[in-house]
Length: 287
Image (tube, rainbow, N blue to C red; front, side, top):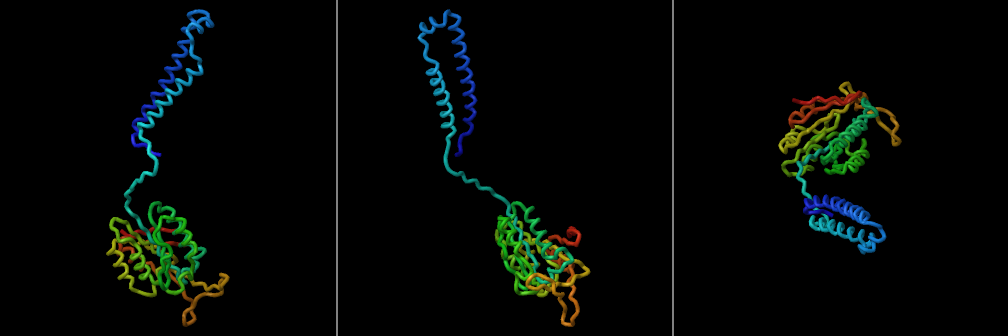
């Protein structure tokens, strides 16, 4: 229930004043009658109305005034629609799920650490809409933009290496899908958070980055991994490591963080570049 004219609620302050006056009057009457003489004689002479009747008479008077005040405040049933205008904030996470993200230079591995970081950030975004794109050789919209953070984090949690069956690292395709996933409305702050080790197998990153910048989208890049490199584990169906990935010459493949690529992407869109080390995340923001 809502009230249109709440100013009349000030009249409720009259009720306790009236109650006090009535109580004072009753007490004064008793004192006056007692002063006139013997109480039994005075009662018969004054033909006093019973105290019960007097109580109900006063109660009805005060209650009636209370209901009158409520009526003057114009109570109305139903739901009042309140339109709140807010500036939209949309954030899309681009999460690399290629085989190199299983490297263990970050514990327990790159992808798990990236998911933990993304989950924490989602909790702190508050009123923003968030979404997730998982990518390897092809991108996939894992979670469209939403304010349902619980659902978004649930869909984040089930991502793993192999979520995208097509292997590789198509960063450009992921960026283009993200650009097309944002609403076309103006006035929205749009940001892409690209979480990857930076290895790209498909090319066309410059074109995709320019497309994002043209649409007013900032790209924040988070580099996962170490510059020294880490072997890529191969696991069986039970998740046990059975060996490490090798190239055609039989040499161990070392996956390194390609920070220069990520710095360039962030710089061209007015974003920022972060690195994740085995100890902690440090911020390295472009000026």
